[in-house]
Image 1 (cartoon, each protein chain N blue to C red):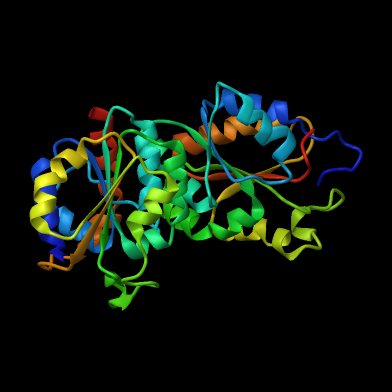
Image 2 (tube, rainbow over the protein chains, first blue to last red):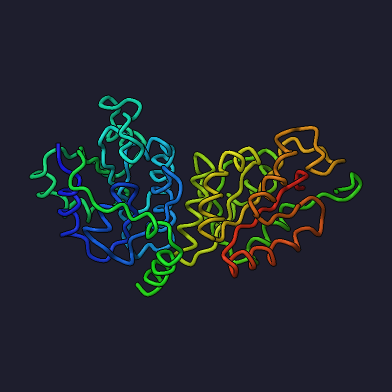
Length: 188
Length: 172
């Protein structure tokens, strides 16, 4: 099992100008680890990150889009796996941080915690490349290549919570954050 | 209210108005009201990209992502899908003030009534819910109503707000 913040720090080393769509606790981690105006924080409703990312990927085929999803979030929008695989955007990389619980909502276990096979679901839905990582060394060795594969790419990160970062909800939901993202994307 | 004798709106006229609105992507879950003369022709139209989604709230988010990328899109669905997506509409379209344009078939709508007077609870509540949510809406029922589409969608994008058209009769 890996610490989520350590995974994100590894990912940040390879991140350049990609759009990143993170959710909940991962969003707070990522905002601290790799702040960027191209972080898309206005997912709004739980589960919707992958769908926002699909819209961004289709609207900006010249940009790569990285989703940092959660396992509980993905379960709320499981059909998006099928939709994304059907549309097959080449520029979409979909990470799922699997911690087995609703960390932002009290730590209750997700349905099927420890039994549901997220990589298997993505493979069956038709993602082009599917990976699963539970060792940090393995992730460190392969994350760069994963980010450059032809999408849609899916990667499960088996994680536990790491360092605790500030839960900056005002920034997450602010109109200024959305304006800054829109301006950055237009300029990118 | 649509009069039973008035001529039903044509799907081809709705599609033409969608295109005049600068919309090139349609995100859809099939709806029996709009199936034959709207969704099937859209699916065959090479100038429109159709994204088939599993659930309607996916469509709200896809349209949001496209809007940030400067691309106009339409979410086409049944009123049951709209009801299922109210939380996504609430936060993404209303609270985040994003231009989500929707055309929604009122499945089971009686042609001789206004939607809020429908005998069907699921239809009766749609317009009042949109009013409470402060989402602008209008009806597409008879020929000529298609003229409402482009101004409404242009305004939705200019003001970054949602707009919902409710299809009250099966288009011809």
